[in-house]
Amino acid sequence: MSANTSHGFPFLPGNTFRDLTKTSYHKAQTLSYKNGYAVPKRPQAGIGQSPLVSQQLTHNEIKQLTIQTAAVSHTDSSRTHPPLFCPAYVSNDKKVLHFSGFLRQEVQDSPDELYRIRPVDIYYYLVDDTMCVIEPAVENSGIPQGKLVKRQRLPMNDRGDHYHWKHLNLGTDLCAYGTTYHITHCDAYTQEFMESQGIVLNEPESVPSDPYLQRRVQPQQSYIPPADSHHLKRFLTLDRKVLCFFALWDDTDSLYGESRPVTIHYYLVDNTVEIRESYQPNCGRDPFPVLLRRQSVPKDFKPSCESFPSCVLEISSQEVQEYYSPEDFKVGETIRLLGRSFKLYDCDAFTRSYYQHHHPDINLKPVQPEEKALEDMKREIPPYNGFGSLEDSLQNCLSLVPEPPKKNLMKLLENDHKVLRYAAKLDSQNPQDEGRQFILSYFLSNDMISIFETSTRNSGIIGGKFLEKTRVPKPDSNTDNPQFYSPSDFAIGATVEVFRHRFVLTDADHYVLKYLETEGDKVPQATLNSIRQKLKVDTSDPMEKYHEAEEAQ
Image 1 (cartoon, helix red, strand yellow):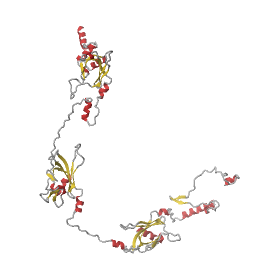
Image 2 (cartoon, rainbow, N blue to C red; image 1 turned 30 degrees about the vertical axis):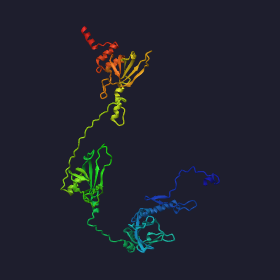
Image 3 (cartoon, helix red, strand yellow; image 1 turned 90 degrees about the horizontal axis):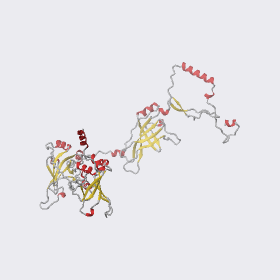
Image 4 (cartoon, rainbow, N blue to C red; image 1 turned 135 degrees about the horizontal axis):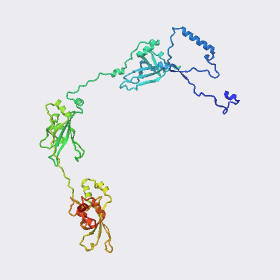
């Protein structure tokens, strides 16, 4: 405002300007630190207020006070240093006064009780003079227990006064929100604190007994079980204890019967037996391993009438004379359960230890079961049906879902686009086939043969493809051991029979001779000479010429 009046502007919106010389923009602090603790600052004199007394002193007066204070401190040697300052919220932190008491609750419309005594715990927090009332939980009381009054400052009267620790003492009542709590006892820390503050505590009182709780306390009823009832004892001592035997079920007497491995479980808790089959991988049987469900198996039963037929599965407990027990299961012997024979050949470690402890007279010697040697079934490949190639038909016998036959990839990559071409004519008794010319191509990548007929004018026969690419077997081979044509069989003048058609090779190109010379150890010499003679190439051995030249010299 002074900045505005110095320039003569009225104090109106838009005429105020900020102080350009101001450099400090911090906000005023309301707390200061003393001995490491935060304490509030003393209020300073504002605008229009009288300054503090310390601010009215002159510099000489403040200096004189400092000299007098220093002189007093040096002269009075017996005076000790003042104690370190500690705020109340630090000194009283986590300090709680604990009082014990009870409340008397009236019970209406109940013939069993007129009132009820409910013990409570009263906690007084010194740091902020708050209190809370908690009722300890009683088992099966049926009353919502726990915190009755949450932590707060409890009002003492209608004038706005609150309870203080000076108002608490043993044998007094504490009224909070219409409920009266009678204080009867306190702990050692509370007693020491109250006495240190000059308060004399009254004598502690005992909590009166609750008539309803006394009636609930009854002597425990004793139950004496009958002499023949030991089901609970057997359950506690023998539960989850099972004897495990490995056996072979001899079912060879039935149609298509065989000997199957099974596992017999004997449950000691109720003397029941369970039989499970042990399936081998790829045995082809349905996944139903339970051969006999868990039940008590009768060892022998008395027939009600000899002449009347009876069903074994419908016998009653009165007809059974004896059930199977652990003494009846002996390793190495055959046991008959419900009309089936089982050969016990081994048992597990727990069964062996159980017999050693309870039945030492029974000797458990494992027996090696007889295993029948499996016959090696040879797979017979059916004869070729004539559809497709031999390789494709063979795949139907090797797998349920036929796959394409595997190819020789290395041979396919090395001989790709390598073709041997021969000129051929048809060897036929039909005079109409005279003069027909063919090109026989042999593909080195997959050993297939294709035949193409050249067109001739005025022959009346349309030229073109005569045979698709396929592997051609030799006439003397069979479907069981097929033998196919190879480049070594194609000599000039040789006859090649292709599916009952006879072709005579008349000529070949130069690439055929070049390729066969590289494979000289696999191709007969007669085949090479026939091609050389047809192509008018010197058939003599170069090594022989070299030796003749040396002899001439």
